Amino acid sequence: MFDIERWQEIFDTIRKNKLRTFLTGLSVASGIFILVILLGFGQGMQNGIEKEFKQDATTSIWAWPGVTSKEHKGLNPGRRIRFKNNDYEMAGRLFKEKIEYESPRVFVRDVNIVYGNEALVYSIQGVSSEFQFIEGFSTAEGRFINYKDEVSLGKVAIIGKKIKEDVFSKVDTPVGESIDISGIRFTIIGVFNEQNEREEERIYIPITTAQRVFIGDDKLNTLSYTLPPVENFEEAVAQAISFKDNLRNYLKEEHTVAPQDDSGVRVWSAMEEAKRYYGITGNMKLFFWFVGVCTIIAGVVGVSNIMLIVVKERTREIGIRKALGAKPWSIVGMILHESIFVTAISGFAGLIFSMTLLEVVGPHVEIDYIVNPSVNFNVAFSTVMVLILAGTLAGFVPAWRAAKVQVIESLRDE
Image 1 (tube, rainbow, N blue to C red):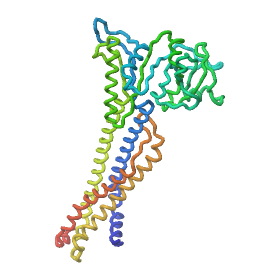
Image 2 (cartoon, rainbow, N blue to C red; image 1 turned 180 degrees about the vertical axis):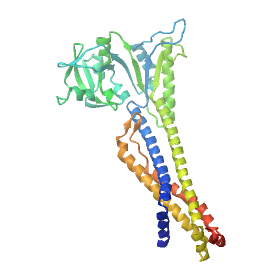
Image 3 (cartoon, one colour; image 1 turned 90 degrees about the horizontal axis):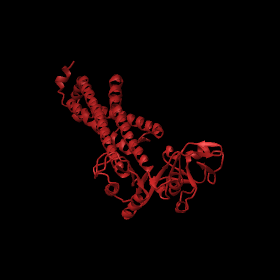
Image 4 (cartoon, rainbow, N blue to C red; image 1 turned 90 degrees about the vertical axis):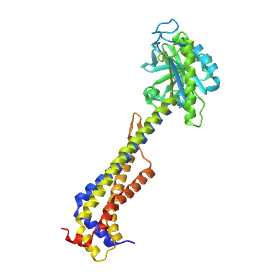
């Protein structure tokens, strides 16, 4: 039942002790605020990591040659390993059942790119028709390289959206336009979108054309693959590790690289990296929870201390109330109401302020590995409910102490 006199007492007490009540409420509100902000940034880290890995297919695996660091079978360290078409073809046959998409890649360097009278400075890469599925980008206009382009040594190119915006802003579409690469005319057949704007500053051409026209042999810079998706994350990680190890062992054996030499042949798995980063994110979230909960506990302890002071200050008043017939639970309720009120108002103030801040600022936060920090409202609200319960418990001890006050002793209190 609503007791207006009880609420008048609570507000009178707060008015008499404005600074003390404010500081107590501030400690509670700051605890909720810090916890929500920390959880928000924990979610922002997870969003950022997911965005980074969405740029490439999650199951992608990349292999590239390096320089040996160990002697093996009479061969000195310091040898530069070179991948060839045969490496790609043999690996494809050996691991055919485990591969979803595959593509070699070669970097085309020391060429001049010209559009009209304008010289362009962009990277050129030779890839196969399946490369778009490995990189995980979409074709915004036209099409990507196809098998026919590879077989016919097609003089075709697909450009990134950033190149379109920088170079072809005066035409409706760059599809059908021509660029000269070291004096050879290439027709633009498509425009692709990437999550990372820097990767939209690339030009892709058929790998066969790149090797025949610009490289002069069948060397490759990278071998890239994706594995069939599986429902279970741990199973996907195990699948990626197995394929990665098998591919690395094969390439090392083919190029006479010591099994312990990790610099001669390098293999990278997106799934393994994802597991590592998600593990770091999980540990960071646990740390954020720990810091936030400790801050809230400090606030709750502050509420308990303040209630003890309140009981001490009102000892004589409590004695008079008991002398007039006030029941112990009435005294307990009086102290608990004030404790719950201060805790609830402060907790919800901290919640509203932190949620508003994340809602306004969060969508604009986009730095490395932190994107749109946010927090689930149900989690935050439940935290405030737990805080109110803790505030109730914090006020109970002082309230019970007040209920135990002896009338004679309280009336003697100065």
